[in-house]
Length: 491
Image (cartoon, rainbow, N blue to C red):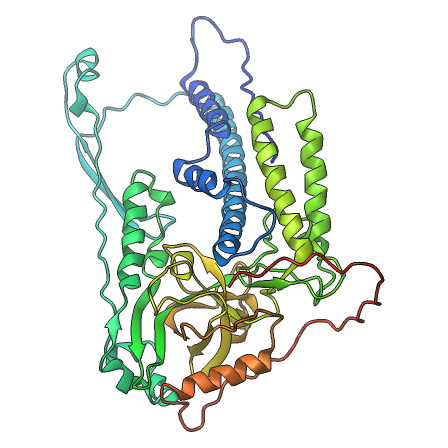
């Protein structure tokens, strides 16, 4: 990541005028920008990174290790994006401050105006979607040397009110999101008679409120109101035959991760060389061919660039520490890419479940990587699997392929469904004993069988038939010698 430098340039000032206030403000703003550049990673992310980056073996052999790698990748990408946004915003703010300083210097000084006493109220909506009301009360005080010592002379406070929602449970409440739900799933009313609100719904909103409490002092870094209320319900259902169902209603955000050299040997340069695109998903399997993963080239290039900067004479000790950690992470990832294949979000239909559910033990309703699932939206049902793990304070994510089927306008930067109108029907314990490349027809048939165990499909409805959209490639010529490195799969 590039380091930025901020320089404050000043001219000679006339002695009888002192240092103009607008230049002082500009100087303070630039200094604050420099300070931001060298501020340590926020504690929340830093602690997560320290935990995630504990030494790991190169061979990834278990679900939890797969998930740790995937979460590590996401945290890194999000951190880099956030720093880039802050740098751009800081640069823009400095440029605007410079323009204001020039304009103020050219304009005549206004006549002094007495401060208006009384209160002024203003209501605005923050970037995070939170209505924010401010009230400024101006009163007469004593002399400045006294008032500056009084804590209450210049003070502010605010109160953030958050209402934690209740889980939808009745058929009427669920059909507020989709009026055709019981027509498509005729066994649902019977299942709801003994439905239980999942403890994961409570844990989800506990995680959300904990995040809000922790970040309450930085209003624009709070969870947006939209993302706070992203889950309508999570229910535990069970048929008379014993088939368990993890039922969730939420919105749908987009995941665009994943790579597989066997099925997609080439990817666009902007993805291969991207520092944000993550080539892994939690669902992975041993490579079947010698065709290299296309993401390896980009990651190896980043290792070379990192080592070059590491050995440069001007690199600081703090930067070297970060680079060593980064290079080690990249090398672990390269080893994984050479031995394993992953789902490709642009082509494979899958959903994302919070990582704390995927790694939970002792809960028969908690989904696991590879479990079969059906997404219900509008009047259609889409078969898929649980393919990736996400944050513990957010639900409702699916692959780009799934998202575009629900809404052709969906993209990595635009969610397909913003309302809580998507139903996720997950069948815990249904994953295959051995992982392998996606077989869409097999997925469809298995989901049909699982739906039959909870009442089947309604008359006139059927599961979506996924088409293979991957570019057709010639099979690689057989080679002599040992085969590709095989990494044991975690089950």
